[in-house]
Amino acid sequence: MHSYAFYNGHLSETEKRLQALDQPGSASKEPVYTYPTVDNPMGAHRHSDAALDGDSDGKALSQLREDLARELISPMGNVAYPRNLSWGNYLDYLLCPTLCYELEYPRTKSINWTNLVAKVIATFGCIFLLTVISEEFILPVLQDSEVRLNNTTSATEKLLILSESISWLLFPFMLTLLLVFLVIFEYVLGAFAEITRFADRHFYSDWWNCSDWMEFSREWNVPVYSFLRRHVYATSKPSIGRSNATIVTFLVSSIGHEIVMACITKKLRGYGFVCQMLQLPIVMLQHTRWVRTHKTANNVLFWISMILGLSLVSVLL
Image (cartoon, helix red, strand yellow):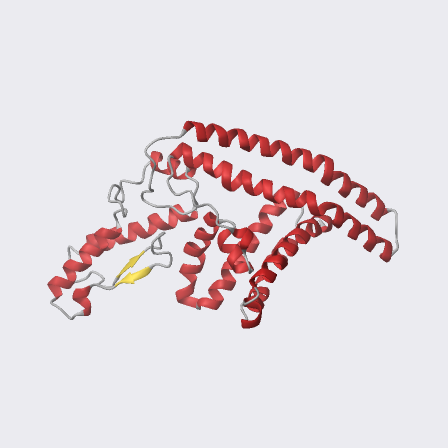
């Protein structure tokens, strides 16, 4: 909703500026702001050649009109604002596997029904496996540790119980992570992409080869990363600078992930928020010259933290 509202709001202001040029004496002559897109993820002010060269006012005004009109048309040229403002276009956007609204998306020629059916079956298969793993290997460990913790007052014994519980949950939670990843990014998003004939199937990259957390944040969840980069980082960077924009982006992402975890677990603990915000100082350390050169060691540490972190947070919850 944020992306839909803000992009159409930008297009509305652009259209008003274009109409105002019918009376150029009172109209704004500021350069056109091109909204962040896939090809232009940071957005920019488009300076016309006529204005830069100090050419005649007539040529500069004509160039400004052309730039404003171009901003109202999709890159593929088939949809223009405000013709996109329809229920059909809005419902199509809701079904498309993306969080960033565009006037028009690249589409495949037809639906691959075999691929669609396979993804639907795989989705339910993974959900079945997740249910089995949770009921057989995760819940019994958590329930048993809760009973044992309630029956002891020794701090040492509690620490041993927590350590044992974490060790028992390492493998089940790693399987859960991978299955959840498959369900969301490979099967569910892939199925909706097939239904809507959405051509861009780049929902993730090879995050398992990451050597630092910044790389992981870019490659683990491409739709969310694209949204945060367009609507948080790109919009805040001109006002507060690159470093502060990065902090704000991580802050918004951390709050969003913590809200999701609170809805799932019915508990608001803040562990996810703290762990995600701790990635910032870790990234600063990982970007130092000595640490950056040891990519294999960084990847090993990344996986150790992933495996330990999931079971640790679960036990703490």
